[in-house]
Image (cartoon, rainbow, N blue to C red; front, top):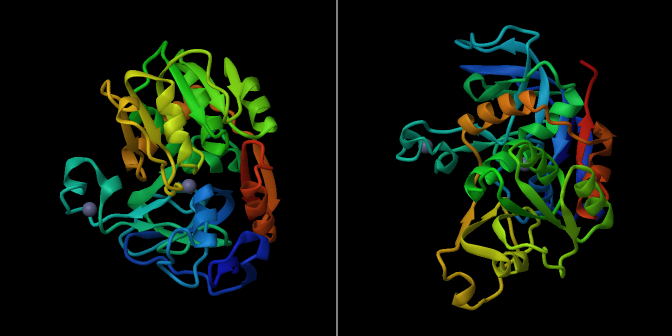
Length: 334
Ligand SMILES: [Zn+2]
Ligand SMILES: [Zn+2]
């Protein structure tokens, strides 16, 4: 099969992904083989490709927002019939037995596998995954529109949960990429006032188009104190910026897997029972709840399409804030 392979991490400007021919995977016990139609490009892929996340498998095929059709089922896999459209997300498997898995917090499992990082992902024509970690995709979404729901969407949704923002509340979104462009639609649906803070003018324009009441750049302060904030940009100084405009009792949720160091700040910014809380992976429950709500609202993703061999170009565009909404690789036509 054709795939984009990462042999050793490097700056994306050096185009480290190699478009090449590799052996297609075989579905093992309890697994499905999925023919990939589309795969979203996430900031986490950038951190894998550039090595901010230390390599766990090498070489590796990145990509963890996979939409495709079940091609074949492995032994004892009976949940899906061949041809059914499914999605594969970041959390590829867990041990199912640790204290986190047993308490509804499988996102924190110490023995989890991650698609496109510890196991091969969707920048390829085929991928395998355990059937119990695969999501049915609601009918209303095209393959391309559905791909960003699988990480940007689910993580944006979990970030909203963690932020604790209530209907009628004021929410700051710091960074306005793929996750924020979905999260704002869920927040607006719940009657939340959204303030977008992002360095790129095109991203501020998109935020306003999607219903933000205000959009500013990093140095601007929202005109209203915030009940909650979500930091999607991987810049530690934004945590302090958000604390400065956060009401007492408010939460700053950190939606990324990687962030530059958070600068030192005075305790007075945190005092008043303000909370800083990271968002780590997601549970299957988050994914199922989100896909249901996404279909109900319905969420409209803005997608910029790249062909599979152009994965390096997609990552470069993402790194340089040149993607409006979400970048998605078109792998095949379903
Ligand atoms: Zn576990
Ligand atoms: Zn992701």
